[in-house]
Length: 433
Image 1 (spheres, rainbow, N blue to C red):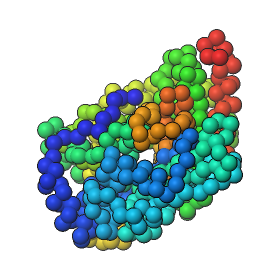
Image 2 (cartoon, rainbow, N blue to C red):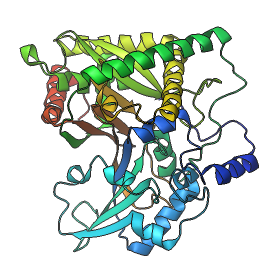
Image 3 (cartoon, rainbow, N blue to C red):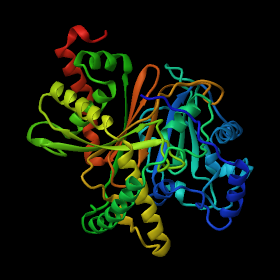
């Protein structure tokens, strides 16, 4: 995992605040970048959930929210009546927080995770919610007293924000593109042309081929990082390649019963890259990459093929795909200003040939007052209409995985642990006790 930072490129903060004050009077999303606008229109959501040894009342959650907003001021953007950078009044805090008392944590956190559609129901509330369930009779045998869940529009939060806030560090976004590192005129022109062509083609195909809305399911799983590290070393692959291989192999299935493909699994995965350009988004740090994993029956061979594919992708210019995608977001936004009905709702369910999105967020390690009492595993995840997503969240001791997928795929998550045990049995000398 490459390093990540909250650092951004210089911007005139007085100018930013003045633009914010004027813009939000007419359009709450006026300050959103094209990438943010795309995720907002698609009603994309993200979540963070973790156990805690602490208990909370309404005032305690209000204090938690106040600290969150001080570290991530973007949470004050994007809704009617927003005052960017300012604390929320009590009636707003009451509307976006909740505390529930339960007798048992059975079924949590899986039964608590959802599409979070309620975030978009009221345009006059912030684009996030903070929820707590806590035990009626004190901590359980694991020392867990409460479960905290933060849900947000993906337009205002990304995985690196969550990782920074878990460490009680600033997750504020300045200007994230590097205006001094300009891409060539030819590359920019090519990206814009491809974006217009891609947008028109994508809209047309989506209208014709977007699938019907499907029921989605949510599931979590945590595995010892020590265990996975040993196996990756034995197989001679990167740890993230092993993560990707385990999940895609298990979810796809075996033999003639493969769900996605007998030949190639279409995947998109994300990473952070510190080499920013003038064409990068001004809010998001994340960069998206396309991958095609050749299906093989032998897992060890498949894992090495995944590792080889990842290596080949990252040896190339990884800015090209994201540059084109950013240009497409801008094209869609421009069309939407002219014709608000574009893109239609079914557009968001079309994912082309992508079977799964694999998101590896930066390590989440608790530190400081914001996450005082939080214990592993820490689960992060996302939901996007029509997209199967697996989010990997490394902690100190565990790799926490969150699955947001069509319901028919969720049962295959239970294949991951038996698959891991089978591989370990074939390499007993290299697996940690």
